[in-house]
Image 1 (cartoon, one colour):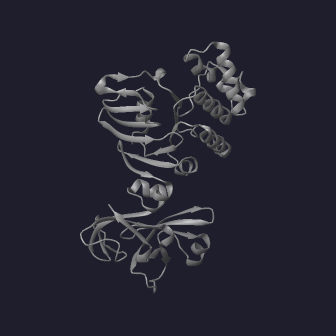
Image 2 (cartoon, rainbow, N blue to C red):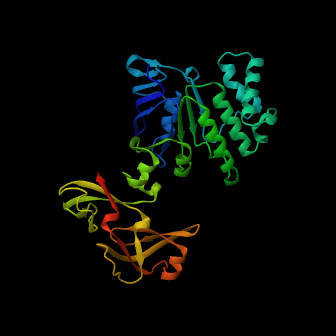
Length: 357
């Protein structure tokens, strides 16, 4: 019997088509990331049974939840799923205790037993003292814990968390992330988190799945993503310069956008190969005068933008190809780097990661 989640589904909403294959074993946490309009919310609704799929199947723990070819489609209440929707969506007219007890009552438990188990789950998340309060009376952190307790109280086979941090302000996020991490570690079923925040995804999950235009474009560990992004979206998440082109000869790459050539490691690929080349911003050396280093890649252009974070800065350059460098604030001051100034970017061929497109 297949454990965990197996989803191979297709559906259309107006002009948008979602075609996704997703496998999440029991005990594993997967983060689903993608730009706005990529289909994340549509996938959540399909897995939860709120939207019918047109083809494929959804199987959890060996049980078929949906398979159009056999006219099988379980209603949302018949699916062993714990869902924490974006914005938490606690029932405003119910107390925190009755919010957590709601799913248990739907499973057929009597009111007293459902409330007893709900109280146990509130205690598990250290919010047992808010059981009599309505959602409007809860802080953001309290509401998140109540929503988690509600999702887990039904002992689901699949836990689905849609933007679990979106309702929290910055001050509450560190503690909320810690609470969520412990809850995920204790849950033995399949776990899927939908988020737009790559840092939260990397902190909470074992594997990342990238959804773009209704399709999975890349999946793997965060280290794989950081080292070898396969799309401009993933490169932007990782803060990596990503270029695409055709190898003209060993050690020379003609860029697909027509913006010049790039020297790459001579043994990275053979002539005619279509490849991606990723360049870490830390591998880009900046200077305000023509460099005298041994780097084979030297590009001139104006400084387009400077973004400061902590004691470091990212400098975007209007070179061809466009590049982003990461330097210290001391380097910004020492070199006199300013927006609009002319600059040179140098990259050693040996610091470029090359892989099949």
